[in-house]
Amino acid sequence: MKTQILLYTLLLIMVSNCSDEPVDPVEPPIDLTGKIVIPPGTRDTVLFFNAVDNVMLPVYISIPSGLDAPVPATVVMHGSGGNWKDSDTDNDGIDDTIEEWTLSSQNRQWEALLEAENIISAFPGSYYRRGTVENRGDWKKPPLQFAISASFIRNYDAYGTLEVLRKLVSEDGTPLVSSDKVGLLGFSHGASAVQSTLFDTNAVPNGWEWSQSYSGTSYTTEIKSPAPLPQEGGFAVGVMYYPGSFHNSYYGNPCSGTSIFRTYTDFIIHLPSDDSLTPNSECMLETVARNAGGLATIHRYEGADHGFDGEDSGIDGQSSTLARQRTIDFLKQKLGAN
Image (cartoon, rainbow, N blue to C red; front, side):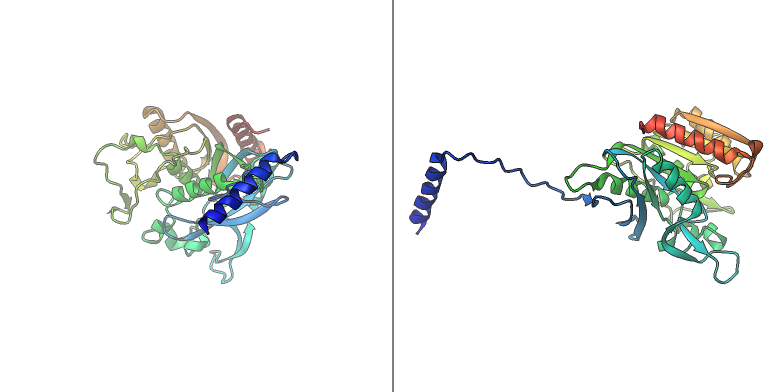
């Protein structure tokens, strides 16, 4: 039987070789293993990834129409108000329900701003799947704060989202995102998460113990070490709006000269004058300059307060407009967006 099969196979080869008919080349199959195929015409979608704490974290991704892929992208880290359109159903002053999966008003505005520049945007929701809608009340204190920490949880969220973006492909396998042209933008609690994401882990001295201090109590066992830099590299650039910058001494105290903080890339930071968090950010900037971190582009807004993005406040009532234009120009310059 084996001989018959062999002879039959040889006969087929001989017939094929003797034929005068042209043979069309066969395209090798496209290997999309590990990729996320986005159907043509998709404008937005919600994807999930397994986060550091085994939470399936949702990411809203917006794809401008008519892209000549691959293109730059930006990950947007929400502030204490959360990622999604939400409401307060029990009138206690704290929002407790969301509208799945509808972005908050601020996020929708940034989606439109980035879309106008042909930049793919991604909005990871760090709170809802972890038990809260907003960073309010008891969630600002241990132990609940540790579950949504800007210092050692949300940086993993940012890198998880970066990995998702790098997996996006069209049906023919073309990447949608330029893997080395992804920016990171954040507001308030999200801006503190931008800082921790851009932290250069090469700056950690031998024997450093990761801890945080709240009201005189030091915590160690509940604290994670920083998110490692992905093998493909991290974010190309960062944008911070009115961050906290202190991190409860996670990196040391930036205002006493003991902080080890530095970033591995350049960033732009927007600081309002009427914000109690700004002094810590000024200390952080001194630390970055001293520790030879990424280059900081600093903009200060006289008369503006915390949360001014999207509001007409500050310089001639135009702090928000001015900061947004500066941010878009900065992203276009650093990411090479059209």
